[in-house]
Image (cartoon, rainbow, N blue to C red):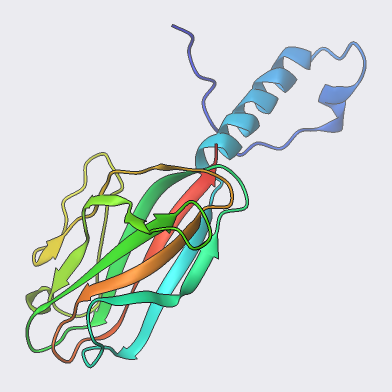
Length: 178
């Protein structure tokens, strides 16, 4: 199996680009490192915010904070939910849903939706970053069931449950071209 050039943010110098330069092998290593760095770490994000008190919302509340349309085929690499002011009880649960055609049905990208209970406290976030990660107490980490999204697919945020008196929550989805 081929070994990946270590991803790194490296600059390319003029000396390495000159014809018959002695540093041409080093140059291709830099190009490989930069290319891998961009492929692995550069990404976009869509932020869905529910500002202020939200417990008076009738749930499920669909399409909160509008929707976004992917301009290119994308891979969803992570999703983070947050709640800044804990309520006096209950759970805030959010869902991200996609539709592949205008006017079409929206379906969840999760097999487990993210949630934060009032017992988790203030300024809490939970995500699905992979690797060694332990979600904070009082939270349910999202589990993605859909990661590949085609161009021109729409995505929206739905609120399924609310904490009593909870304030300022949202969800951030990270994605990159595929």
